[in-house]
Image (cartoon, rainbow, N blue to C red; front, top):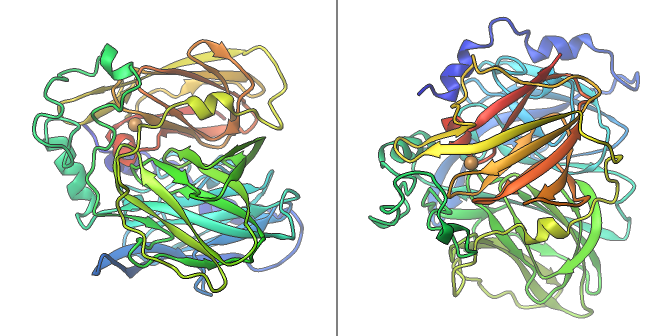
Length: 482
Ligand SMILES: [Cu+2]
């Protein structure tokens, strides 16, 4: 099996660098403001009392979070200081395809010491993020929030951004090797025999019976982070008694889904992946890898400490931040909940309704994507094809309404992400409904999920599972209309 890195390295020679293309474009507002600099760098963080060498995306002022406004051009220069090639993908944005940041598809990686310029209009606001799409760098925390403010933001509302991550002291390349050589998807995490009865990826009745599947998490992580910190030393966010908050939760994990719990607070989910949904009240919301949740919260009057916790799917591990209204004592929150959480389901997805749905229209084209895999060797695929640079792209023509039918034939959930377009969830297991507009949808084992999008951004676009090691193992394909 070819690795994605090898494949991507082989495919770039005929493609122009994003730097050249971006510089050739005139800026959209005619202004000459300098670009925002994003430095890719190595840095140390402390995890559970140990120093960890990781990567980071940081502005010269030290900020990890990029915030801008809809209507302004996205004008950014990425400077690569990590000592190896890299490329950053703007997850959820709809740039011209050469600026999409996928090595070997949109262009070559930025060489060590090099830079690339980006300049494109922002069509919509919301909560997004950026991450390396090169090799396994995402696992080394080469990730950051990307917030685009718009008319939905309220001046009387305090914004609280929480980016979740999974962390291992084991190098990502070693994790991947262990997964490939463990002979099962249980990888490093499972007790011997946990997967012994599953010799093929065929679904069994017990797996679809609503019980947690035996293989939710391939990798045993050392820690889970919220804004790069554990609950041993969590971020404390000062809030006003009786104030209003907008929580922007970003799942920047490589492999881990969470249940986001608000504890004593009740929230109102108002957007997923940046796009408004009919508000849904609740105290706990699921978030798959790469997804985002915007949750409005009103605080009670008086002092108080309110943990916002994210518990890993199927496990006890949790991470989070603590909201503190003045003078409330802050107690330490354990990094393990009392009981394991259940597996994520599609129950919330079924109830989400887009505030601005796609114009109803019959699909001009339908692509079936069976999500497939093989236990031995950690092989993941789409329609039983492990992606390589010779895999034909899915055919699409500009102007078409396209539906993608994801059918999960494996016992693991897969968060499926399409680049360069927002899509709408229009069907789950045969039931049609005008669901959320978003960019990443979870397809749980045995389920069929259909999304629709308008082919309005010509180019060559990635379409893949966002679990990092599944993507790298081949659960990846492309759509091309240029
Ligand atoms: Cu996957």
